[in-house]
Length: 71
Image (cartoon, rainbow, N blue to C red):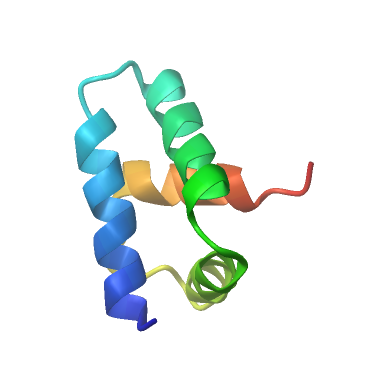
């Protein structure tokens, strides 16, 4: 899966939750990524974030970072 696809998907998820209060939106985005993205997708997002996270909307970035934070 390309970076563009991962970014688009994360931004789409964030757009769904944009009307939620910020902290709730971040938590919901993170939970969605944990529940529905396979390990390859999460690894691709982790690598994309490590490379600067170009193209991610701020809410998508926050949710992705929360999802990928060690438990």
